[in-house]
Length: 363
Image (tube, rainbow, N blue to C red; front, side, top):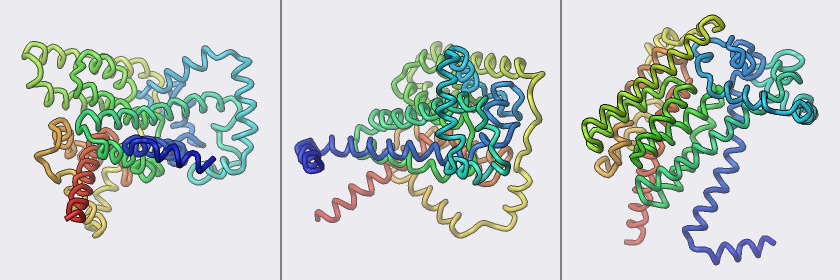
Protein backbone atom coordinates (compact mmCIF):
# COMPACT_ATOMS: atom_id res chain seq x y z
CA UNK A 1 0.00 0.00 0.00
CA UNK A 2 2.83 2.39 0.91
CA UNK A 3 4.64 1.63 -2.37
CA UNK A 4 1.43 2.26 -4.29
CA UNK A 5 0.98 5.63 -2.58
CA UNK A 6 4.58 6.62 -3.32
CA UNK A 7 4.13 5.60 -6.96
CA UNK A 8 1.01 7.72 -7.23
CA UNK A 9 2.78 10.69 -5.69
CA UNK A 10 5.63 10.29 -8.16
CA UNK A 11 3.12 10.53 -10.97
CA UNK A 12 1.69 13.83 -9.69
CA UNK A 13 3.05 17.21 -10.73
CA UNK A 14 5.56 18.59 -8.24
CA UNK A 15 3.24 21.45 -7.34
CA UNK A 16 0.49 19.03 -6.34
CA UNK A 17 2.87 17.03 -4.16
CA UNK A 18 3.90 20.21 -2.32
CA UNK A 19 0.29 21.32 -1.96
CA UNK A 20 -1.07 18.02 -0.61
CA UNK A 21 1.93 17.50 1.66
CA UNK A 22 1.41 20.96 3.12
CA UNK A 23 -2.30 20.31 3.65
CA UNK A 24 -1.50 17.06 5.49
CA UNK A 25 1.15 18.77 7.64
CA UNK A 26 -1.15 21.66 8.57
CA UNK A 27 -4.04 19.29 9.29
CA UNK A 28 -1.92 17.37 11.81
CA UNK A 29 -0.85 20.62 13.44
CA UNK A 30 -4.49 21.76 13.53
CA UNK A 31 -5.20 18.81 15.84
CA UNK A 32 -2.26 19.67 18.09
CA UNK A 33 -2.86 23.42 18.39
CA UNK A 34 -6.27 23.16 20.18
CA UNK A 35 -4.65 20.90 22.79
CA UNK A 36 -2.12 23.64 23.50
CA UNK A 37 -4.89 26.23 23.63
CA UNK A 38 -6.99 24.17 26.05
CA UNK A 39 -4.04 24.01 28.45
CA UNK A 40 -3.41 27.75 28.14
CA UNK A 41 -7.07 28.75 28.16
CA UNK A 42 -9.35 29.75 31.00
CA UNK A 43 -11.76 26.89 30.32
CA UNK A 44 -11.09 24.68 33.32
CA UNK A 45 -11.63 25.50 36.96
CA UNK A 46 -11.90 29.27 36.48
CA UNK A 47 -15.60 30.03 36.76
CA UNK A 48 -15.39 33.77 36.09
CA UNK A 49 -13.76 33.05 32.73
CA UNK A 50 -15.35 29.71 31.85
CA UNK A 51 -17.57 29.17 28.78
CA UNK A 52 -20.52 28.77 31.18
CA UNK A 53 -19.92 32.23 32.65
CA UNK A 54 -19.62 33.72 29.18
CA UNK A 55 -22.90 32.19 28.06
CA UNK A 56 -24.63 33.44 31.21
CA UNK A 57 -23.14 36.92 30.84
CA UNK A 58 -21.36 36.83 34.19
CA UNK A 59 -17.78 36.52 32.97
CA UNK A 60 -15.05 39.03 33.65
CA UNK A 61 -14.82 42.19 31.62
CA UNK A 62 -13.87 42.75 28.85
CA UNK A 63 -14.28 39.02 28.00
CA UNK A 64 -18.03 39.10 28.61
CA UNK A 65 -18.56 41.66 25.84
CA UNK A 66 -17.11 39.29 23.23
CA UNK A 67 -20.22 37.25 22.67
CA UNK A 68 -20.14 35.71 19.18
CA UNK A 69 -18.99 32.23 20.22
CA UNK A 70 -21.28 32.12 23.31
CA UNK A 71 -24.26 33.22 21.18
CA UNK A 72 -23.61 30.55 18.55
CA UNK A 73 -23.07 27.96 21.28
CA UNK A 74 -26.36 28.84 22.96
CA UNK A 75 -28.15 28.59 19.60
CA UNK A 76 -26.66 25.17 18.86
CA UNK A 77 -27.50 23.87 22.34
CA UNK A 78 -31.05 25.24 22.03
CA UNK A 79 -31.78 23.42 18.77
CA UNK A 80 -30.09 20.16 19.77
CA UNK A 81 -32.62 17.45 20.67
CA UNK A 82 -32.41 16.40 24.32
CA UNK A 83 -31.86 12.78 23.38
CA UNK A 84 -28.93 13.68 21.16
CA UNK A 85 -27.38 15.98 23.77
CA UNK A 86 -27.75 13.26 26.40
CA UNK A 87 -26.13 10.66 24.18
CA UNK A 88 -23.22 12.98 23.32
CA UNK A 89 -22.78 13.93 26.97
CA UNK A 90 -22.69 10.27 27.97
CA UNK A 91 -20.07 9.54 25.35
CA UNK A 92 -17.99 12.55 26.35
CA UNK A 93 -18.20 11.52 30.00
CA UNK A 94 -16.69 8.15 29.16
CA UNK A 95 -14.09 9.52 26.76
CA UNK A 96 -13.10 12.80 28.42
CA UNK A 97 -14.41 13.39 31.93
CA UNK A 98 -13.04 10.15 33.37
CA UNK A 99 -10.00 10.02 31.11
CA UNK A 100 -6.81 10.28 33.14
CA UNK A 101 -4.76 11.83 30.34
CA UNK A 102 -7.29 14.57 29.61
CA UNK A 103 -7.73 15.37 33.28
CA UNK A 104 -3.95 15.51 33.63
CA UNK A 105 -3.83 18.02 30.77
CA UNK A 106 -6.39 20.18 32.54
CA UNK A 107 -4.36 19.81 35.73
CA UNK A 108 -1.28 21.38 34.12
CA UNK A 109 -2.50 24.88 34.75
CA UNK A 110 -6.02 25.10 36.13
CA UNK A 111 -7.33 22.07 37.93
CA UNK A 112 -6.50 21.47 41.58
CA UNK A 113 -9.61 19.61 42.78
CA UNK A 114 -11.07 16.19 42.06
CA UNK A 115 -12.49 17.29 38.69
CA UNK A 116 -12.43 20.52 36.63
CA UNK A 117 -15.89 22.19 36.73
CA UNK A 118 -16.10 22.23 32.92
CA UNK A 119 -15.91 18.43 32.89
CA UNK A 120 -19.20 18.15 34.79
CA UNK A 121 -21.97 16.48 32.79
CA UNK A 122 -24.01 19.71 32.66
CA UNK A 123 -21.16 21.53 30.91
CA UNK A 124 -19.67 18.88 28.65
CA UNK A 125 -21.88 19.42 25.62
CA UNK A 126 -21.55 23.25 25.55
CA UNK A 127 -17.78 22.79 25.97
CA UNK A 128 -17.75 20.48 22.95
CA UNK A 129 -19.68 23.03 20.86
CA UNK A 130 -17.31 25.84 21.89
CA UNK A 131 -14.31 23.66 21.04
CA UNK A 132 -15.70 22.72 17.61
CA UNK A 133 -16.47 26.38 16.79
CA UNK A 134 -12.94 27.31 17.80
CA UNK A 135 -11.49 24.49 15.70
CA UNK A 136 -13.59 25.47 12.67
CA UNK A 137 -12.27 29.04 12.98
CA UNK A 138 -8.71 27.72 13.16
CA UNK A 139 -9.13 25.65 9.98
CA UNK A 140 -10.82 28.64 8.32
CA UNK A 141 -7.82 30.78 9.26
CA UNK A 142 -5.44 28.39 7.52
CA UNK A 143 -7.67 28.28 4.44
CA UNK A 144 -7.77 32.08 4.30
CA UNK A 145 -4.00 32.31 4.70
CA UNK A 146 -3.48 29.91 1.79
CA UNK A 147 -5.87 31.90 -0.41
CA UNK A 148 -4.56 35.28 0.69
CA UNK A 149 -0.95 34.29 -0.01
CA UNK A 150 -1.99 33.10 -3.46
CA UNK A 151 -3.83 36.34 -4.24
CA UNK A 152 -1.03 38.59 -3.01
CA UNK A 153 2.06 36.76 -4.30
CA UNK A 154 0.93 34.29 -7.01
CA UNK A 155 3.59 31.94 -5.68
CA UNK A 156 3.18 28.37 -4.46
CA UNK A 157 6.33 28.63 -2.35
CA UNK A 158 4.92 31.62 -0.45
CA UNK A 159 1.60 29.82 0.01
CA UNK A 160 3.34 26.74 1.41
CA UNK A 161 5.51 28.79 3.76
CA UNK A 162 2.66 31.09 4.82
CA UNK A 163 0.19 28.41 5.86
CA UNK A 164 2.94 26.24 7.40
CA UNK A 165 4.36 29.15 9.37
CA UNK A 166 0.84 30.22 10.39
CA UNK A 167 0.33 26.79 11.96
CA UNK A 168 3.81 26.45 13.45
CA UNK A 169 3.71 29.88 15.10
CA UNK A 170 0.57 29.32 17.17
CA UNK A 171 1.50 26.68 19.82
CA UNK A 172 4.11 28.84 21.62
CA UNK A 173 1.61 31.71 21.90
CA UNK A 174 -1.66 29.96 22.71
CA UNK A 175 -0.19 27.56 25.29
CA UNK A 176 0.28 30.37 27.83
CA UNK A 177 -2.89 32.38 27.25
CA UNK A 178 -6.00 31.42 25.32
CA UNK A 179 -9.69 32.08 25.14
CA UNK A 180 -12.74 31.16 23.09
CA UNK A 181 -12.60 34.19 20.80
CA UNK A 182 -8.90 33.85 19.87
CA UNK A 183 -9.06 31.57 16.82
CA UNK A 184 -12.11 33.45 15.44
CA UNK A 185 -9.99 36.62 15.67
CA UNK A 186 -7.37 35.00 13.44
CA UNK A 187 -10.01 33.81 10.98
CA UNK A 188 -11.90 37.09 10.73
CA UNK A 189 -8.71 39.13 10.38
CA UNK A 190 -7.41 36.95 7.53
CA UNK A 191 -10.83 36.71 5.85
CA UNK A 192 -11.54 40.45 6.01
CA UNK A 193 -8.05 41.25 4.74
CA UNK A 194 -8.81 38.91 1.83
CA UNK A 195 -12.07 40.79 1.20
CA UNK A 196 -10.12 44.07 1.06
CA UNK A 197 -7.64 42.60 -1.40
CA UNK A 198 -10.49 41.36 -3.61
CA UNK A 199 -12.31 44.70 -3.15
CA UNK A 200 -15.51 43.14 -1.88
CA UNK A 201 -16.53 46.13 0.14
CA UNK A 202 -20.09 45.09 1.01
CA UNK A 203 -19.03 41.67 2.23
CA UNK A 204 -16.29 43.38 4.23
CA UNK A 205 -18.81 45.63 5.99
CA UNK A 206 -21.26 42.81 6.81
CA UNK A 207 -18.64 40.40 8.12
CA UNK A 208 -16.95 43.23 10.03
CA UNK A 209 -20.12 43.64 12.12
CA UNK A 210 -20.14 39.91 12.92
CA UNK A 211 -16.43 39.99 13.75
CA UNK A 212 -16.98 42.96 16.08
CA UNK A 213 -19.41 40.83 18.05
CA UNK A 214 -16.48 38.44 18.54
CA UNK A 215 -13.96 41.12 19.57
CA UNK A 216 -13.86 44.88 19.29
CA UNK A 217 -10.33 44.89 17.86
CA UNK A 218 -11.91 44.97 14.41
CA UNK A 219 -11.10 48.65 14.74
CA UNK A 220 -7.70 47.67 13.29
CA UNK A 221 -9.48 46.47 10.15
CA UNK A 222 -11.39 49.73 9.86
CA UNK A 223 -8.06 51.56 10.03
CA UNK A 224 -6.61 49.31 7.30
CA UNK A 225 -9.69 49.96 5.16
CA UNK A 226 -9.19 53.73 5.37
CA UNK A 227 -5.53 53.32 4.42
CA UNK A 228 -6.04 50.78 1.63
CA UNK A 229 -9.28 51.83 -0.07
CA UNK A 230 -8.60 55.53 -0.53
CA UNK A 231 -7.06 55.02 -3.99
CA UNK A 232 -9.41 52.20 -5.00
CA UNK A 233 -12.80 53.82 -4.58
CA UNK A 234 -14.37 57.08 -5.58
CA UNK A 235 -14.40 59.65 -2.81
CA UNK A 236 -18.14 59.19 -2.27
CA UNK A 237 -17.95 55.37 -2.06
CA UNK A 238 -14.87 55.58 0.15
CA UNK A 239 -16.65 57.80 2.67
CA UNK A 240 -19.94 55.88 2.53
CA UNK A 241 -18.33 52.50 3.18
CA UNK A 242 -16.17 54.02 5.89
CA UNK A 243 -19.23 55.53 7.56
CA UNK A 244 -21.13 52.22 7.34
CA UNK A 245 -18.27 50.39 9.04
CA UNK A 246 -17.98 52.99 11.78
CA UNK A 247 -21.73 52.92 12.48
CA UNK A 248 -21.87 49.12 12.51
CA UNK A 249 -18.91 48.96 14.87
CA UNK A 250 -20.51 51.49 17.23
CA UNK A 251 -23.94 49.81 17.15
CA UNK A 252 -22.53 46.34 17.91
CA UNK A 253 -20.15 47.57 20.59
CA UNK A 254 -22.68 49.80 22.38
CA UNK A 255 -25.43 47.18 22.02
CA UNK A 256 -23.36 44.42 23.64
CA UNK A 257 -22.23 46.73 26.46
CA UNK A 258 -25.81 47.78 27.20
CA UNK A 259 -27.14 44.22 26.96
CA UNK A 260 -24.66 42.92 29.53
CA UNK A 261 -24.46 46.04 31.69
CA UNK A 262 -26.34 44.47 34.61
CA UNK A 263 -24.78 40.99 34.37
CA UNK A 264 -21.13 41.66 33.72
CA UNK A 265 -18.47 40.49 36.12
CA UNK A 266 -15.53 42.38 37.57
CA UNK A 267 -12.93 44.08 35.39
CA UNK A 268 -9.85 41.91 35.14
CA UNK A 269 -6.46 43.28 36.15
CA UNK A 270 -4.05 44.47 33.48
CA UNK A 271 -0.30 44.02 33.48
CA UNK A 272 0.93 47.58 32.90
CA UNK A 273 2.84 47.81 36.15
CA UNK A 274 4.29 44.34 35.66
CA UNK A 275 5.61 45.51 32.29
CA UNK A 276 7.29 48.45 34.02
CA UNK A 277 8.61 46.29 36.84
CA UNK A 278 10.30 43.85 34.48
CA UNK A 279 11.15 46.32 31.71
CA UNK A 280 13.36 48.62 33.78
CA UNK A 281 15.80 45.74 34.24
CA UNK A 282 16.64 45.79 30.56
CA UNK A 283 15.94 42.89 28.25
CA UNK A 284 17.73 39.69 27.34
CA UNK A 285 20.04 39.26 24.40
CA UNK A 286 17.50 36.80 22.98
CA UNK A 287 14.94 39.61 22.84
CA UNK A 288 17.45 41.78 20.99
CA UNK A 289 18.15 38.99 18.51
CA UNK A 290 14.40 38.53 18.12
CA UNK A 291 14.00 42.23 17.26
CA UNK A 292 16.74 41.95 14.65
CA UNK A 293 15.16 38.81 13.16
CA UNK A 294 11.77 40.52 12.96
CA UNK A 295 13.25 43.48 11.10
CA UNK A 296 14.73 41.06 8.58
CA UNK A 297 11.60 38.94 8.25
CA UNK A 298 9.21 41.85 7.86
CA UNK A 299 11.36 44.25 5.87
CA UNK A 300 13.53 42.25 3.46
CA UNK A 301 12.86 43.35 -0.14
CA UNK A 302 10.49 45.97 1.17
CA UNK A 303 9.70 47.30 -2.27
CA UNK A 304 8.20 43.92 -3.23
CA UNK A 305 5.87 43.69 -0.25
CA UNK A 306 2.15 44.17 -1.02
CA UNK A 307 0.76 47.55 0.00
CA UNK A 308 -1.88 46.14 2.34
CA UNK A 309 0.74 44.23 4.34
CA UNK A 310 2.85 47.37 4.68
CA UNK A 311 -0.19 49.17 6.02
CA UNK A 312 -0.86 46.39 8.51
CA UNK A 313 2.77 46.62 9.64
CA UNK A 314 2.27 50.34 10.24
CA UNK A 315 -0.28 49.42 12.93
CA UNK A 316 2.20 47.22 14.81
CA UNK A 317 3.36 50.07 17.15
CA UNK A 318 -0.29 50.58 18.12
CA UNK A 319 -0.61 46.87 18.92
CA UNK A 320 2.57 47.03 21.01
CA UNK A 321 1.18 49.99 22.96
CA UNK A 322 -2.08 48.11 23.58
CA UNK A 323 -0.09 45.12 24.82
CA UNK A 324 1.95 47.24 27.22
CA UNK A 325 -1.10 49.06 28.61
CA UNK A 326 -3.70 46.27 28.61
CA UNK A 327 -1.83 42.98 28.35
CA UNK A 328 0.34 40.77 30.52
CA UNK A 329 3.89 39.63 29.94
CA UNK A 330 3.95 36.77 27.43
CA UNK A 331 0.31 37.44 26.49
CA UNK A 332 1.08 37.65 22.81
CA UNK A 333 -2.44 36.72 21.75
CA UNK A 334 -3.01 40.49 21.89
CA UNK A 335 -1.08 40.52 18.60
CA UNK A 336 -3.37 37.99 16.88
CA UNK A 337 -4.84 40.75 14.72
CA UNK A 338 -1.32 41.29 13.38
CA UNK A 339 -0.51 37.61 12.84
CA UNK A 340 -1.87 37.17 9.29
CA UNK A 341 0.01 40.17 7.89
CA UNK A 342 3.23 39.47 9.79
CA UNK A 343 3.12 35.80 8.75
CA UNK A 344 2.67 36.72 5.09
CA UNK A 345 5.52 39.23 5.24
CA UNK A 346 7.75 36.58 6.82
CA UNK A 347 6.74 33.90 4.32
CA UNK A 348 7.60 36.16 1.38
CA UNK A 349 10.98 36.93 2.93
CA UNK A 350 11.75 33.24 3.50
CA UNK A 351 10.72 32.38 -0.06
CA UNK A 352 13.02 35.10 -1.42
CA UNK A 353 15.94 33.87 0.69
CA UNK A 354 15.38 30.26 -0.39
CA UNK A 355 15.26 31.22 -4.08
CA UNK A 356 18.38 33.35 -3.68
CA UNK A 357 20.21 30.49 -1.97
CA UNK A 358 19.19 28.12 -4.75
CA UNK A 359 20.58 30.61 -7.25
CA UNK A 360 23.93 30.64 -5.45
CA UNK A 361 24.04 26.83 -5.42
CA UNK A 362 23.22 26.66 -9.15
CA UNK A 363 26.02 29.08 -9.97
